[in-house]
Length: 238
Ligand code: ADP
Ligand code: MG
Image (cartoon, rainbow, N blue to C red; front, side, top):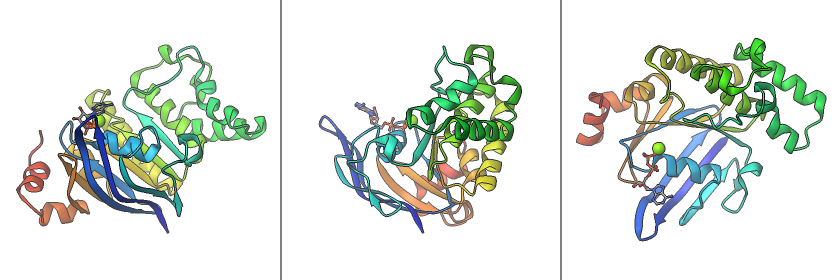
């Protein structure tokens, strides 16, 4: 089954074209990474998939549903941001539960899902704390937990490790890889970091200037880069 399909997706801000006819298919269970230099359109593309931004043209399908006109909360997606985007006045538990409460999920079901997610992420002993009382790594785990409890058909991550120090980055990266396996989840993940892309992805989408340069497995891109840009980008950390 196909989890996500983009057909000729374009985006302009004012007169500036930032995405030029993006075509892409993501299969169920795949871990797909958008990689490319700053400003190439990665976040914009992810936000269009999430419904936080409208495409200027083209079609977005999640599963077999055309979702161009579907609001974010009805798309079956959950997104994790670089800045965590937690509510400072709510406890860890309430941050994780809020979306489910708003969706009218029964209290017992919320309790069960939050309990399961917090044990997967080793957050059990932090449930009563506020975000300010947590480390950066713990805050990002709460944001990931908040995504998990929604049981989305599609996880979207926008540079989730960028605000973490080097050791935590490795740690959290391994954690996300583990969750991908344990949940058999479909994940679309944005980064400008080649190492993250090469170690996490089933499939890498290399973007440059709002266009796809190449789509392939890490080994395909490494062994058979389509052009100098891909060769340079995958080859040399920047
Ligand atoms: P990336 O995530 O790859 O760094 P973005 O998707 O954030 O890139 O941005 C792609 C381009 O679109 C950039 O040139 C950026 O300045 C521009 N852009 C992004 N969001 C907006 C916006 N809301 N209004 C105007 N221009 C934007
Ligand atoms: Mg970005």
